[in-house]
Length: 168
Image 1 (cartoon, rainbow, N blue to C red):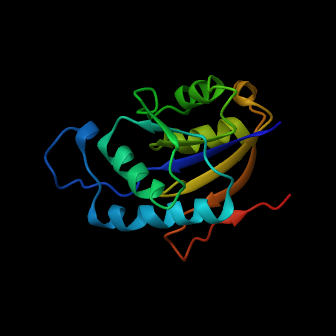
Image 2: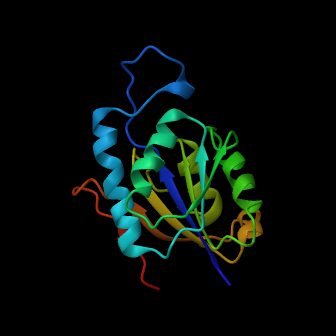
């Protein structure tokens, strides 16, 4: 049975705050963007079993706002591995996801998000803040072999860049 990765790039962060990168919060625009991503996920995707969220404050705050539109009870794990700029790190993380999870949300950063999509599907798509990409894989270990298929990509909060949904 196929598995689904819901890759979410954190919403717009606040660069005006003089703190470490890891502690940087969402900007006002980011706080407004993230709920639309959650609403789109709730309307178009099966329920999420597991959320793997970068330890960065902006990623945790993004998931908090995204998840408000989703059913309660989603298991959440904070991951230092997801706090990376390297798509191969994310690929390895995806390949090691538990087989019991059929639909996993991964909340992370760029350029790792764009690199991961390309590693898994052979396609490059832009991942601006608060965007989502949905990738179907035969199973989680298939991530190591690049056997994914891009099902959707876009930023739900941005009417100028609508989400694409592959109906196959």
